[in-house]
Image (cartoon, rainbow, N blue to C red; front, side, top):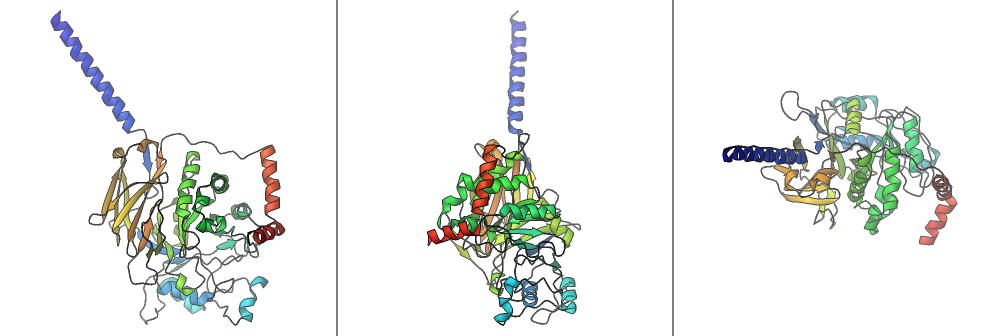
Length: 451
């Protein structure tokens, strides 16, 4: 009898141990980290290239100080691999073509500014890499011309600017928009088969002097609902030029990720020069991971998120850093960039160059930070308390030459919610308020009141 009881006790103990092990294993495997870089080939003969580019730039065809030909040559000499010229209310074509001339910008000629495109020879040389650099040497690598870009809502006083991409030629020329009318531009781009992102939202929110504006639930909902409603609107600019009026847009981005991810929408963070002068070109830009430098691959990377956002000017802030301001624009310092981002179970492994420190952000908070070891760092989420409740994790690296961030690596747990637009009384009130706020008279009254 004692022997039988002993055997039963052993069996029950084994069952209990097995049950606890299964439960612990199940608990540790309740989420999967989904990476936008999962398809990137980092090493070997088929390795993808890292291509530097900007999707937001200007010329004297709109309100810049520099003509298109000079601006394109400057980007080429600064090592850019692709460029989208997105003048205000003008859908860009090839750089050797005359762009649409709007009456609004006739002042450029009156001021004596050149309004000039590339010659056919210059365009061919730059887009094949055979055009000589300033020092006379041949670069050897091409700069891809991304056509169909347009910074919409060009006639508004409020900075409700949206960049549309891959619009048909001429579509969007003269698009004036309405005050506070982000959605009008986004809907216009989607209707015409393009994709879009929201430009410098901090400028619209005037958050430079009010950091709370980027976390205001009404502001987060305002942008978040548009991102959820329109699949073609891919994200927001998190870095823009020198970040002077947009120092807290990364915080808004974190808030939008938390707002949109439960519905299955990843919000991508873009970085662009928004250059109006040559000195603006070495400010903020992106590094796209692509199998080849082509216009089609640029669009695919924009839609899939396999790119990094880089800035040469990182403004300090106490919430998500950096602790000290970085300003390396127009210097010889190399900019930091990730060279590999890989997920192994619940661990994210990265390598980088020209970077000293790294921080990991999840749901708007820094969850880990430290120095890179031989250019490498790892984060094991199983070692982070509460990680199973995170909606995403992302990494930022810093060096003397600037800052670089990954896109969000999504922590997938549950079936996504279904987004539905407001209906009934609330929808009617919303439309009435927009009609009021979109009027020029209302905007002028508000601006005068502020003054």
